[in-house]
Length: 138
Ligand SMILES: [Zn+2]
Image (cartoon, rainbow, N blue to C red):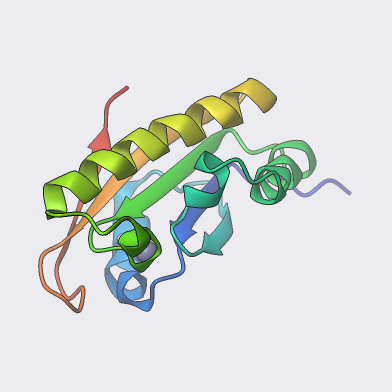
């Protein structure tokens, strides 16, 4: 029997997201119909950098579970982005926004039937006790 789920969450593995991201998932209404999870360092960073492995995982979701929405969550102060030695949080945010758009285009190229929703998670403190989740428009 087919098992179908509507959404795929691509998130960073960072533990600081767990609490507030879980709450946001429950309250946002975006995840009705269930969701698959890809949890890796930097969320979509590897896809943006050209890795095909995680893009293949998106394919499992898209083809096997017939997901309709890919919800891509990147966050501020991300360890996977430290390699760039940004001079400011704004600079990191700009790079991550560019990467999120790259990820969106790469996913749409391969799986044109899905909708990609970009979300920015702004940590308000170093431990992620407060996080603001911002839906990015296209
Ligand atoms: Zn991260």
